[in-house]
Amino acid sequence: MVASRSSSQPDWEKLLMEWDNQQEDFIPDREQRFKTILDLLEAILSRRFATLDLGCGPGSLSARLLERFPRAKSVAVDYDPVVLTICKMALKRFQRRIIWVEADLGGKQLAKVLEPFKPFDAAVSTTALHWLYPHQLRLLYNNLGKVIRRGGVFVNGDRMPWDSNRRRLLQIAERVKSLRGSGGNQMWHGWNKWWNDLQGDAYFNELFRIRKTRFPEIHSKANALSFEFHRKTLIDAGFRDVDVIWQDLDERIFVAIK
Ligand SMILES: C[S@@+](CC[C@H](N)C(=O)[O-])C[C@H]1O[C@@H](n2cnc3c(N)ncnc32)[C@H](O)[C@@H]1O
Image (cartoon, rainbow, N blue to C red):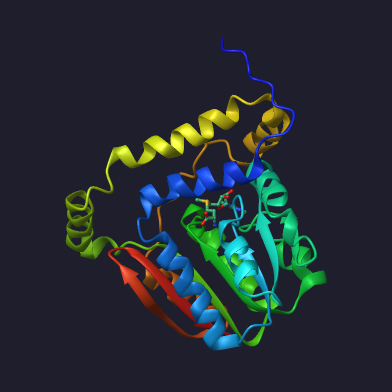
């Protein structure tokens, strides 16, 4: 058995930076994708708005949003106490404009939990909703329909593969990724190292214990759902004008207007 290292205070900003580095192995255009999401918010809402960051992780998207829009606010939601703690500490400088909420995005209670902070002008999310199973995504979108104001917007950037009757497109996308030197098993190296280093730090022991009761696996076993599934589910939840506005292979950003 390997003894845990003890760390009194982790270097929070370094943890967020290392998170960003390993995420770029999966999404080489990640910064461009963040910028496009923020450009869309500015085009639709101008520069003062209240937003929800769904599956905020250690805070990459909220940090960029609050940096770029000094009059914006963010409610950052995640159910993993490990990454939410990093988000709280690494984004402390924004504490007047950010609220951290520990909640299950796929749970029935989400609208109730968010009730005190609504209405939202926008919800945003990156690389998070592929963790959800279809019934959880349906619940989430119904809850979003309740907390986003009319005329508000939901912008999601994530992997959305083609559905099974267009498997050939998926195979082509995978081939392009390997030609670019991304994709395949090597991209998990940095991700595994980030999580292993964190698990080796005694500071996080109790947070990992709680995490395990909520996420028995280190990554969800859900399969990323197609854009068609997202679109139909959002329309059912009261959104309109739902379409992909940016795409690189199966990485897409879609916009949905409430
Ligand atoms: C790959 S990370 C993305 C983090 C961040 N948005 C980014 O782009 O770097 C996915 C995040 O979704 C969160 N997540 C997954 N399922 C969730 C759920 N049911 N409720 C709340 N958060 C969830 C995970 O805990 C994780 O922080």
